[in-house]
Image 1 (cartoon, protein in one colour):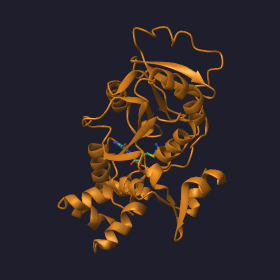
Image 2 (cartoon, rainbow, N blue to C red):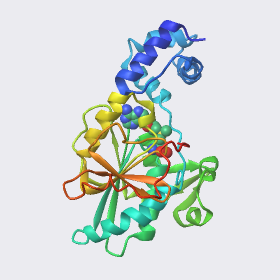
Image 3 (cartoon, rainbow, N blue to C red):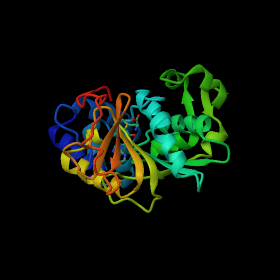
Length: 290
Ligand SMILES: C[S@@+](CC[C@H](N)C(=O)[O-])C[C@H]1O[C@@H](n2cnc3c(N)ncnc32)[C@H](O)[C@@H]1O
């Protein structure tokens, strides 16, 4: 088992590089994820590998990649995607009628299921003549490569991909399924650490920032939400994971309910009362499942 000193080193590295918390009790996970890297680096055990990390930046990058949690699925939790088509697209289609274009950010996109789920809904719901771009970002370069490859195993497809959309948007590629070039052309990828200053980016109409804030401490969450508020248009929407909230974190946001989810919107002079008017259909804030 990994030694306490090595574990503390790895936890500190992960926190410095990604802001992710790796608390005591996660030793088994760190061990399981680093052992294959230790073996391919010719180290006898994880402690030997951790000693190597101090001297080798490329191994450090691989270790950070291996330690990120990339759990995701197609149309994850369904309700956010319903809110996307039913509550977010209609006002934005009206408000952007002059440009006929939408910019969407899948922040912490993992292997791309979130981004490609959104492209399918856009293809099904955008009027003729409209375009949209999904900006898919993650701190893991391996995950970004997976988004660009757009290939998924049968097991991954079984996690939430409806049969009709599978036949419409994917082709067989050996043992895998490959997303159509048409959807792929709507997605751009960029390496982005949410915990560091953002690189130049467009202003977004919709931001999906789902199931990643849970890994950060309060100050980091607050800081990320504040910086996201500067990258979203005044009439835009932010969607968090079902166990994540802007409440008590940042008063730059108001919340509106759409079915079972909260949509977060920048608090603007034009819409100051939205938070006070919480609809009676508002979902429970303690809702979990992310
Ligand atoms: C659990 S997945 C969530 C994927 C997707 N958003 C979803 O809801 O299904 C979390 C993702 O956050 C990424 N991540 C972790 N720390 C990050 C950071 N500091 N900046 C950007 N992405 C980060 C991980 O690499 C991983 O792909």
